[in-house]
Length: 242
Image (cartoon, rainbow, N blue to C red; front, side):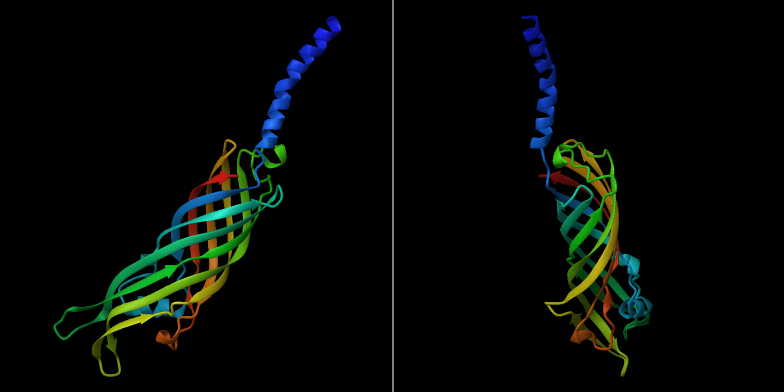
């Protein structure tokens, strides 16, 4: 009888541990869906940026603006995560000629518009593990730094519209110059960030990314080199693990 009671007591003591281990295994996570909001800082390295910021009153920094997106992540291994994301950026800036006015002494106004929709794939190396509490039934790290990089396609639209000067005869005309509807650039990026797991299902994170991208402007911009679409993006967001 005494031996039986001891076995029962031991079983009762081990039951919570077994249940906890099983619970973690049932919470196995294979990936996450991330939603992010951030700020994009174009680098403005090509000749169309340089010429326009010389002739007109806007600056490259005027195109600094919000960028939003989402990403699906797959925990390929404990230390490698693959991310596939889509982001959305759009900015329109009003401007005028620096040194010229019309025949009435009024400013000559234009608007410049840039829209980019990066579709990217990123390999993330996480030296402390991916932090998913359910990954292979283990508890993850309380904070998860990572570094990585990847490639992407960048559908974009660049447009200039308003009043412009024809410097061959100094006349002013209404113009609308725009890239083709199918304009797509290709590029690559480097990135890094920190993920903070919030329980079994949610993370919060911060990310810094720098993209190197150039895109052909099309027939409306003959004589210009490809436009620099790259730059720095800073993101904050939340992820739901599944």
